Structure formats: structure tokens, C-alpha cells
Image 1 (spheres, rainbow, N blue to C red):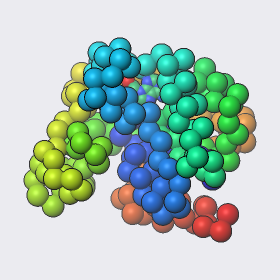
Image 2 (image 1 turned 45 degrees about the vertical axis):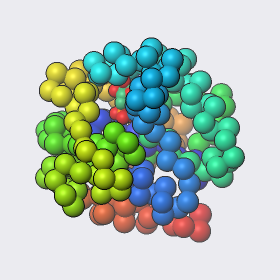
Image 3 (image 1 turned 90 degrees about the horizontal axis):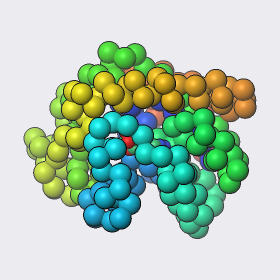
Image 4 (image 1 turned 120 degrees about the horizontal axis):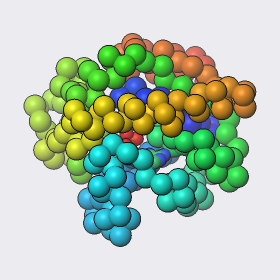
Length: 211
Ligand code: AMP
């Protein structure tokens, strides 16, 4: 299964992708996580993109597509993967088409109000990348990662100004991908408002394991 998860920031792409990846035994490939890892390791890529990411703007298409192309060439992605957060522009979608054939694009549909609520309450683990939420997905101990016990943080780009910028960026640059993939006959729209467990059940009905 070669899938793209599409949707505004905060739609729950990362949460659903992590569950589906575990359930179906395919890698969850998040460009956001790859970029944040590069930043935390102070690689040359990390130094180049930190300011862009913190502001809520997009990293350039060439850098992002090259990173994804390299990741998809790894052995674990041969039989399937979930791309979470890529492509985010029409140019990236065209680039992806050059090096990969997708099976489906899952569009997570959610209101702007719910997006703001989800992003402003989100907490992440800087060590392992796990996501939590102060209301909807509380960690067992406040402020501590369930998986690796690191202190949870608020992403720089989950702060108010950056949230507004990211929603604007999504509307201007990523939203047109819905039409793009509808025209490619790959688009499946899923209601992203329910709890993550209900969305996962819905997903499993769409994609039975024996596919
Ligand atoms: P995410 O974790 O998917 O919300 O991504 C966090 C940030 O990483 C975004 O706000 C962008 O700055 C950057 N980013 C992630 N994926 C892409 C992409 N496909 N193209 C450009 N920038 C990206």
C-alpha cells in the first residue's frame, strides 16, 4: 500500500499514520519528523531549514522532494509506506509522480476551529517524536512522554502566530492538491473530526488487511 495522507496541520495525519503503519507493517514517513530530527541533530540540512520551519513556512520543493526520494529508496519502503506531510505543493506532487506510483491519497477533512484547538493543545516528544494532546490524548504522566520518558514540549510552530501562518500556507499551497488527486482518481476523503480510534476503524474498512 503506497499512500499519501493529506490534510491541514492538526488534522491528525501523524496520529493516524503511526497507527496504520503499526497495524499494516509499513513505514510511516513524515517529512516534518525528518526535518525536526535534522534540526535537533544540528545537521547542515537542519541549520538551513530551522528558521523556515519555526515560522510555519514551507521548506523548498527540491530539498523536500530529494529527502523523500532518498527515503523511499530504502528497502523497508519497497512494499508500501505512508507519506505524511508530503507532498504539500503541486510541484512536489509532480515530482513525486516522477519517482513513485501511489495507490491512494487519504484526505483528512476537518474544520478550521478544530485545527486550531488541536494544534494549540498539542505536545510532542523531542526525542522520539510521539504526539500527545492536553485534552484529547493525555500522556500517562503530565508533560512526560509515555514511550521514552522525555519531557514533552510545544513545537515552535504550534505557537499562535505560526499556527495562523501554517493554516494560510495550507490553504494557498496544499489545498489545491485535493483537486489534483481527485483528477488522478486517487482521492479518498475521510472525516477527521471523530476520535483517532474511530478514524482508524474507518480506515481499516476502506483498506482490509488482505489488500
Ligand atoms: P508537519 O510536522 O508535517 O506539520 O511539518 C512541520 C513543518 O515542516 C512544516 O510547517 C514545514 O515547515 C516543514 N515541512 C514538512 N513537510 C513539508 C513539505 N512537504 N514541504 C515543505 N515543507 C515541509
